[in-house]
Amino acid sequence: MSASSLAAPLTILIAPDPRLKARARPVRPEDGAEVAALVPRLFDAMYAAPGIGLAAPQVGVGLRLCVVDLQPDDKPAPLVLINPSVIAASAETATREEGCLSLPNQYADVTRPARVTVRFTNLEGKTQDLSADGLLAACLQHEIDHLDGILFVDHLSALKRNMILRRLAKEQRQKAAG
Ligand code: K1U
Ligand code: ZN
Image (tube, rainbow, N blue to C red; front, side):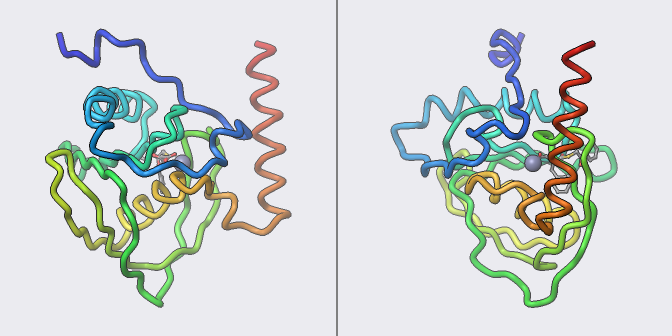
């Protein structure tokens, strides 16, 4: 039995929880034990959702940490990104449909730089650069946004954003009412 399976499953926060709008603080060396314990639980919550990414603030932890796994060809390809930042972004943009585990069942087209290079620290404490395009580029930007309290709806017009947030609130009320 793994250590993460002994811990209670993490609950993913749903918008408009104010913790989703807060800027997370950088992970420091003394956070090592908390990060080591959190990472397997983040992956468990992400795979269970299911999703292709999850940021610590989405489970109420205000640290600059996220996990990503696009599972190309259904094979696991887990990525842990500690203190990630976009160090280069293309002028060319790409528009693709995004979802968010903190806005369940809500989807919209989001326009972002088509290619990015992300610098981060890995679990071994090494600095790494990762260049990405396509879905991985969108996912990395989406997860880094979470660390800054930004949701994909913040990239939309106020009209579209409010429509999605009202629909989400209605669906959550209906779910609570059973
Ligand atoms: O951060 C999150 O809320 C996770 C989010 C990431 C994301 C999706 C799409 C574009 C950019 C970022 C999700 O994983 S939503 C669910 C999802 O996209 C998915 C779920 C199962 C299989 C494939 C995709
Ligand atoms: Zn999200």
